[in-house]
Length: 268
Image 1 (cartoon, helix red, strand yellow):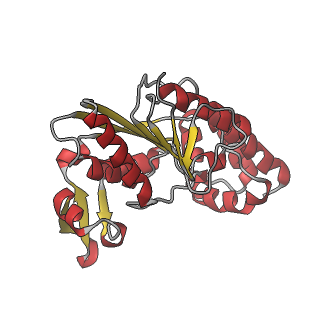
Image 2 (cartoon, helix red, strand yellow):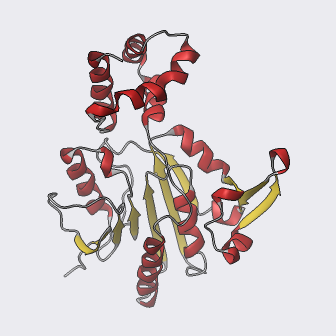
Image 3 (cartoon, rainbow, N blue to C red):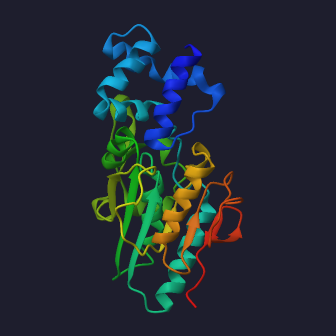
């Protein structure tokens, strides 16, 4: 891919989704777009760039799907879910009975379903929901299926697997594991572009997971994102980010509790 074409993709990714494609990633982007070029019977990335610029709309969604990274797994950074449970217990002792959690960049569903698994035993009789959003329609479709292979559920403790997953035969003699309906009903899946402010939800939210998202944004985009997260978080509520992420250098009221965990100050 020539430099001018890559710069065109960089510009679209940044302007439309806030994604910062680094200069050294041209080969990776080329590989991720190869399938779409074949589907459209296009010969070069330059031709695809012209097609993308002309079509926009659904083609933009496909482009953003292709370049997005969606690595995740159940109970990833398990200490975050322990902190979520502790935060909810404190709120319950104070009499709170309505809880709302947001997983921003939820990928194929492992994160919100993990949160639901740890919250369900804590919130019996409460009104609670988890909003799970992502830019990618492809991974949201996978999250809606809520069905995972043996190796994908291996990190889930056995007691939780027995309680929240239903096994059924899969292809080639494999076993698939489907999240049970009562848990799926707690998770609301929506497409959301984090570059488009303000976000449609009103809050207040009792916790936000925004993990391994900011690493794809430049500093102005990160600052805008954090401003929106602050607006939505309830006083005293936690924000969980990726272990390689930090809010250092971003103006914020959020206080660092420990690496990758921030919290809104309590109301005074």
